[in-house]
Every structure is written in structure tokens, then in C-alpha cells.
Amino acid sequence: MAGHSKWANIQHRKGRQDKKRGKLFTKLIREITVAARIGGADVASNPRLRAAVDNAKSQSMPKDNIERAIAKGAGGEEGNALEEILYEGYGPGGVAILIECMTDNKNRTVAEVRHALTKHGGNLGTEGSVAYLFEQIGYISINDSKDPDDLMELAIESGAEDIEINDDGSIEIETTPQNLVDVKESIVDAGINVDINQLVMKASTEVSVERKHAESMMKLLETLDDLDDVQKVHSNIEFTDEILSSIND
Image (cartoon, rainbow, N blue to C red; front, side):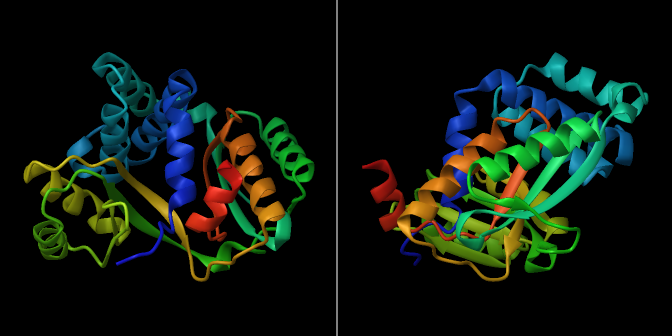
């Protein structure tokens, strides 16, 4: 049983993104396009593309938009103009941050990322400065499971590595990147809705910071999410229920 969600920052940002559907669609289309360019247009044999398409469908993206994005990536049109870049840095209170971007203009992107970090008490780091603190995992979040015990058994049988049930009844599942799709599909086949299904960078250790730094960090995460070239942001801050409640008060 988990006392609080260690992925509260992910869920918080997802809530904000849901309110900005146009911007979210742009980011999802970019991910689909690049995934198709790198691994091909066959969803069945391209796990990254399958996860990207699943995420797009969960956000009610029209089928035509998804198919056009795949065609552009596989055909080498828009996909070749986009480059994946990983920036590393520090937030307020020394929090480690990884920022995944897709861009057709690296100079613009690094300037925007650096400005956001500086504005909220952080700074851009050098390559390798914080990446060693993170590992890539598959992450699934579920809010409407009627029988957590059955779900846990199903997830473990499908390849899940860690499962936590939060006080609010939500369930968080961690998998290897390779098993993410299989675990997610087993859950969906059992008639259970999946709220979040994506690859994330998990910090080896989390850090707690005082309230003023947590507030600044929340603003920084929101600012970075609002940047068109930023796809995902990962940090090792621990947003406890107490911190989140104090920020929202």
C-alpha cells in the first residue's frame, strides 16, 4: 500500500494537458511520426509506435490524424525534420530533471528550455550530469479497478515488476520497457480501463524539498510542459500528499 503517489507529478501534468487538447495532440502526433520513422509503420512489430498510438486513442485523437502521422513518419516527410534531444538540468532545491524534446530547430529549443529553468530557479546541466540517476521503465496507471487483487495477479502474470495501490484506490504498475504493451493489453482485455500507459524515466532515489522549492518546481514543470518542443519531463522530486495539499491551499 502506498501512502501517496510517487508519480503525482505525472498525473498532475496529465490533468493540465487534457485541458489543452490541441497542444497535446501536436505532441502525440510528433511521437507517432518519429516512432514510425525509426521503427516502421507496422504497429504490431513496433512497440514504441503501438504505445504512441494507444496514447493517442486514449486521448480521443481521430483515426485519420493517427494514420496521417504514421504515413508521414514512414514516408520520411515530416519525420526527418524532427530530431530527438534529451536535456539534463537541475530545478529549485537541486532537483534532477530530464527533458525529452522533439524539434526541428535545436537553437530555439535549448534557448526556451534554458529560459524556463532559469526563470524558476534551475539551470541547464551538461550531458551526463543527471541521466545516471534515472532508468527507463513502463508505467501504467489505473483508477477504476473493481478488484485490485485480481488486477495485481493479472499484471504480475503478464510481466509487471512492481505494483502499488494508493490510498485513493488508484493502482500504479511498473514494467520493463519491453513488457509495457503486453501488460497493458492484458489489462484492457480483462475489461479494465487504463488511464496512463507510457514509458517514463524513473529516478533511482527521490528527494524531498521544502515547500517554496516544491512550489517553484511545480511551476517549472508546468512551464516546460507548455513548450511546444517538450515531449516529456522527468524529475526525482517527491510530491507527497502533504506538499501537494499545501501548494493547492
